[in-house]
Image 1 (tube, helix red, strand yellow):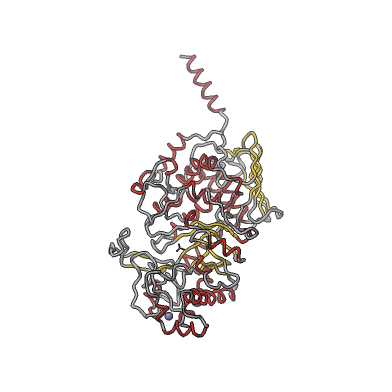
Image 2 (tube, rainbow, N blue to C red; image 1 turned 30 degrees about the horizontal axis):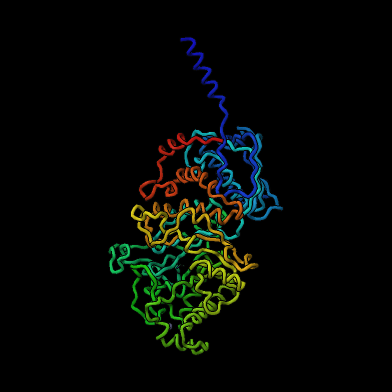
Length: 565
Ligand code: ACM
Ligand code: ZN
């Protein structure tokens, strides 16, 4: 009896002395320069100190990190633990660069600006147990590995797009989307605010845009174009709500780039103000998907007044240097174009000297683009448009978003335009993730597995010397067939992780094996955040295979998946 008590006591003592195990180094996107050393630094109760030169948003980011540590460890970062995590301004680092040095006695984080601090914090969090991304106390080895990191991104523009028009996503759901972007160091949120199927931006001067244009009477069922579920769908964001998103994103180093898609994809606006179309309507907010021939009338001055009014209110909400003006899919191949039979458009073409012929529509679109571009330039902004704006004669200073493959981007860069690469083949996250379509939630089509996203090289096929015009890469999330946050997240993750390495890592630093070995930890982070994901890369296909885990399940999961160094 006595002997067993002694043994038990010895075991308890040993267990008490067991060395904490730092989380294996599984940071996504992989930092540029990492040296992992022996040992660890315990963060529970460590002091967190900010250099007095740090700006307000950087201090706020550090405070969010301290709050997260307090929640998961159950102890405030008040210095009652060992050592200190010190955040220091180092003006010699670039705006998105950061350095981390962790020793057994403490950690130092250096950056010159908010983005560097935000990325350093995300790297620190990813070096901790995944539960740091959750909101409850978890018993775990709350230690950082001793490590030295110097990190910076490959591309300045690292974007993720969201279409809240085909299906509406609330402000809270949008913030969660931004949280996931933050975890992987993305810095541009392209918010596609207008569509044929719904206008989402409150415009005070044109209230019918949200009274009428934000609502549709039903939604097509799968691809049966003549069908309709008869369920009213819609919603819009007030100007205050959009400002809230801008501020939320800005605190995380993310710029929101709003899109007003013109002159096509405008049926919701035409339904609200029919006088803006060539025929005068009547129009109704579209209940089906596709490309409509009903677009803004290019020959009507009222249209330019409307656009300038809308952009004036938009610029008041969105401080971004770039404004997206759409420009895609204005001319369906199989339909007569109202621009061809409209007297106002004909008069304008005559005035501009545009000759009749297959290219006339492109030159007329160039005119519309150039008018909007001039207005935005005069107000200190720059335009981005989908690659259709390149057809005809695109005015200098526009940035082209290459979506119909990479050809448009390659051509635009060779001509001296700046480019964001977002080709369907690699960057359309509305595509299926597996070949077993019957097991996947219904999608628009295509096939874009994780490995293919990861394998994208944005400089492939470029004309030598034009690479500097590639500002970066973006993935797009069109939501024709994505109606719920669970489905949205399933389509996003983990493909966005793969995209983050395309955007962040040097081409020769990518390694699919290393990347997939890190996914378990990263998806544990998503569990902690309550974010859904697809596990097709493990052969588990379908939306019902991986619902976001409950808190109890997460604890079980973390127990079953001990982090070994
Ligand atoms: C697009 O996918 N229509 C830009
Ligand atoms: Zn017209």
